[in-house]
Image: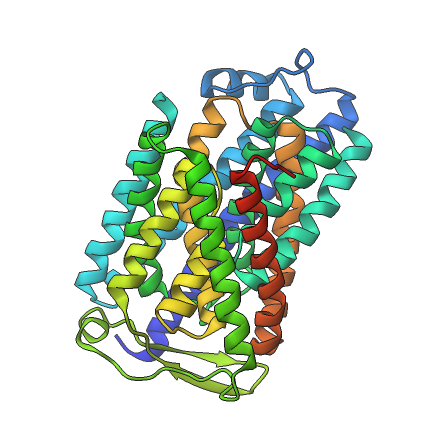
Length: 119
Length: 281
């Protein structure tokens, strides 16, 4: 792989990351606009969806807090996306050692996230 | 949430910008503002600040399509230490007295303040370490970055990798046990212990913090510590602030960044020591 192709790969990765972050930001902003338009959260005071089922149910019903929570969850996933594309970048570079190291980071991260869901 | 929403966005803008320049998450700044100034429960303040750390990290990431400032190998290698430390910390909560930990980490920050002031005073200025030992060679950690303020490409290396690794593990442990982002510890590990230049240290810390925070954020998300009306607008403010801060950092002189960093870690150290002795603010 020559320098130009390497640069192309880096640019594609940059664009993927940008799309991920921008999408999560748009969802949060949409939720905030929905709150202002609806004049409320769609939930009782001090309540908001904390589980996936309730969150998606709320989104279908157009509840603003459910939409914001989805955006926040997507934002939490952006560093995971960062690690995944880094594995790909090291694969392209044929840097096997760092494919392993970065995969280890991803595994630990997923372990921690699953732990967080079940805690 | 209408008026406070705007206020939170503004707080986020400022914290995101500063955080992206220094490589710190800003939790130690955001948490007191939310609790003391806005009267928010500490539980929701910590949840919101974890989300803002992720927003800071991701916002800084997308400032450029191609990020030549951070060192991806150093980030991923040290991330193993940090995430393992964070998980151990989360599991060990209760076994250690948080009083002792606050005082220990607080004094460490004060000691680092002294070290950094000495570095600022030294006549050598921001010297770059370039020798490569076997660990650095084996792990291919040496790299270069383009310094816009000095208008030249700077090749750098580092040393004391095991020391940095242990420090990163301790930083992870602190974040798991005390619920702090520990960006300052990461910057100190790379800059002071491993002798990496300050700009790549800050940029690499930015990336690492997002990954570490994502690991603990799911706990907060599902246990109900993340309030959409607080974390949502804060995330938006921080995202925008961080993209600005990451651009700003590139053109600032390293010496100036250090001069901003010193009083901040001094205050953070003081805050932690006082917290250990039961004084919170």
